[in-house]
Image (tube, rainbow, N blue to C red; front, side, top):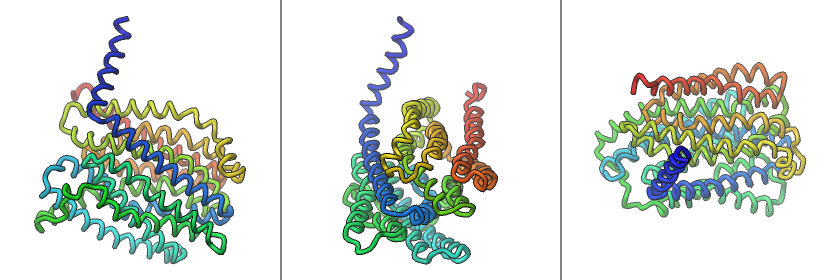
Length: 431
């Protein structure tokens, strides 16, 4: 009886501490906001799929697959770096001013690189010029959404953040609805890409109404700004590479399906990815809550314990979500009116991959908190290389199922290496 009561008492005390610290309130506030934002985005995607033919949807899924890649260039790793550098200095307005001014310089440099890369890629790939413009504009606008999000997180402004999260997707959905209802012709993939890319621009100005402006400073000593810009760029180059490699790994199956198969195959695979927006909620919420505290505990003995608790929390979520894989057939039939039955087995094959991504996500955050974006970039590169090999082996022969299998198998080596690093880092002989 004593053995049973001790863990229960420990759990109760931990719960009380978390509640007193505001962790639980912040978690559910941000989490519920993320749920609303993700649901709005999901409704937007379902609405789009129901409007478009399979061929048009294939084009939309193909072009929208470029958006996260270009977004990684526009962000240049700033969101993660901002949380790491800004979280410990939220009471020092001079240092805040230097950091924010230098981060804006980096954003303008990233825009220049983004334009050059997109123009060159569009020329050699012979892509639609309007689509290329929409992707550049959309990715740059979205980079400001994630940039402001990192400021909310760094200052612990979770209530304001919970209002901020759903706004871009709400505006997207409203514009899409009115465009569909009042347009004289049927919307095509470029129309929906335009709505998706341009709508978040209307939310940027709202940041300055939601965030306490007296806490911020956007200027500083010129020499300090130059030095901080160099420091940020040095840290960010590996954070940027890690983000770029990871995003390309996540989306490249769409590109190879477009190369080896029809637009209908691209559409089927893209539709199979849509339900996983729910996992994006959890990834983002865990990052918003866990990463800032990990960044503050890097020199503290509590770091290991907090990381272990984060891993247990992620495992708990994964176990709770596992049974939902069996609802795939009903889910796709209800949402898409039986239009994409070929997406169901693809969804079921992808599902375990996202469960494992959820479990290992705190370890990736810990690498950033420990100032190891270089190692994370190397792991992402390993994942990218294995994915490239598997995509070219499996997709030509097995189509969408080959793409799902390559996506899953390609990440296993990076998970093993990541686990091995932390097992070695915290082995008993080093404690």
